[in-house]
Length: 323
Ligand code: GTP
Image 1 (cartoon, rainbow, N blue to C red):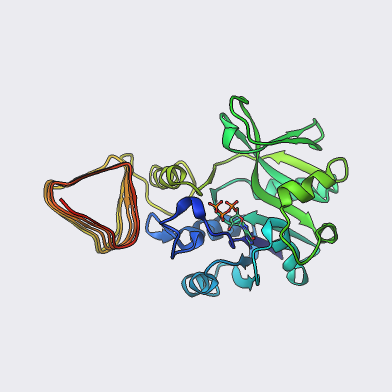
Image 2: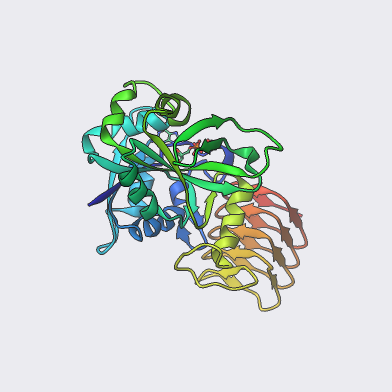
């Protein structure tokens, strides 16, 4: 049995107002709750139990995802009394975790090869193995350096102009005994407080093939949508080159211009002459005739009046943009 503990307790502040009353794991992404892509990814690497380490709005997450689909991995939920940080949340789950398990951040869209990570972890007799991902411009992330055996040599904080490098993809294989290194009852970060303790002491990294994107900012959330629709990441969604997805139940005028790159959520209505490019409209938005939406994300229930232009904006639930 392979178990995955997934951290989903964060507030998702960088995605507000999209995440003000909808936690990141169930934010809609191309017609599905985001976390369903994670479940498929984990299942494809043999995971049969997913434990969600929750904090912010746990009931909503549980209501949407439930116990898992009958043939997929079983889903279980733990709720921290207060945010314990990425390592604190893993320690909090200790009584439920197997001798060896996967731990992941719950906000990445990915199809990375977790099976290789698991196998190399066993071969190397590692204590923690970090899934690493090569990035052209890693300036938003910390860099991880490994030697030819895969031993982690150093971590470098975020910096600009660093050039191509390996970043941590927030996906780890861990031995249960390392949880003893995490102090209990307070907020502890795995990246800052735990990994440095294990350099030269069983901490390995492996560069993984495949796709990876942290969806935690507006731009990356939209990019992830296009990557799903245009087929750059393995997912069950049908591809098309224009990057357009219109959910069943959306009413789009045959005289509207949709795309390139647009998601029109279920229950949306788009009037004649409207133009929607590079934008995501979540459930139930109303777009008036000849309105022009570009580079934007609209929360559920947004109304845009006719003839209005909305450019590079992120709108909160039920906002109205009038002429
Ligand atoms: P921002 O507020 O925009 O930084 O987003 P975030 O709250 O998701 O934080 P961040 O992206 O740094 O978190 C990475 C992952 O860890 C996300 O999947 C979070 O849900 C999760 N996470 C962060 N802090 C905690 C915590 O204290 N407890 C739990 N259970 N999960 C956490």
